[in-house]
Image 1: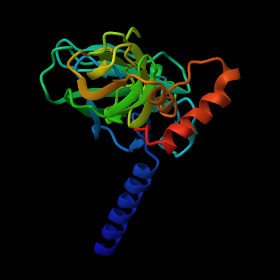
Image 2: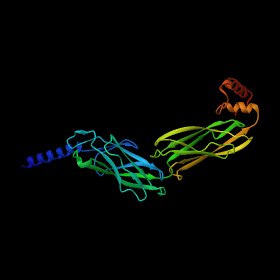
Image 3: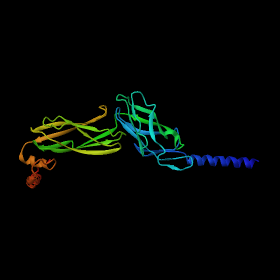
Image 4: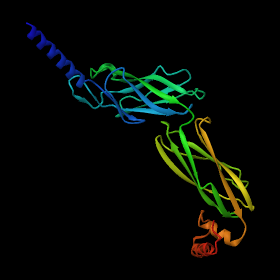
Length: 280
């Protein structure tokens, strides 16, 4: 009798394990790859700036209680219980991938916030219901690193010399960044919008120049298009030199703005300026 009871318990345990193995799951692909294997689980998404929109994407594919794969088991992804002032745009219906857009309040204080994500089988057509889990995100203005190189530039008067601006986006938002350069009276390029996708680094070349000889402090300012609180800056010293040799020397470091037919001659003059120690 005892052996029979133990045998029955073993069968029930095996059935439970089999059921768990074949339970539905949620495969997350953005902002990074992860899998939620049971209801009421949790996931930490990463960092986002106040006011920056970020996206959570899941696959529609899952499985039912028998283990059969359902290519379109999940038909919508919803976000609920978000903090006050946050904006949510739930996913469209019946897509291969389902994305919900979430925007924290523009004045959200720094801290970790939680909300609910729910994958839904519309009308329970596939008999898998829905799966809800808790998501955490850290709201902070510190979501990217800024690098500028070189920080000291020597160029001929009126001749451009490139600086390289690197944005390392450590957050989960793909919101564009705005690059602006100030401190150069001759600089007339308007602010530029650029993209550095989440968890990636991108480098952009910008020419700087000045028409009057002197030493100038150019401020490179980078901010989020969606959040002025997400911003960093760096200072570049530009020395504008007068003189033919220094003009040719600057060609090797900047953007040539002369007709292409003259480029071989300018290249030779640049090499000569190196020989005579005029290049920076």
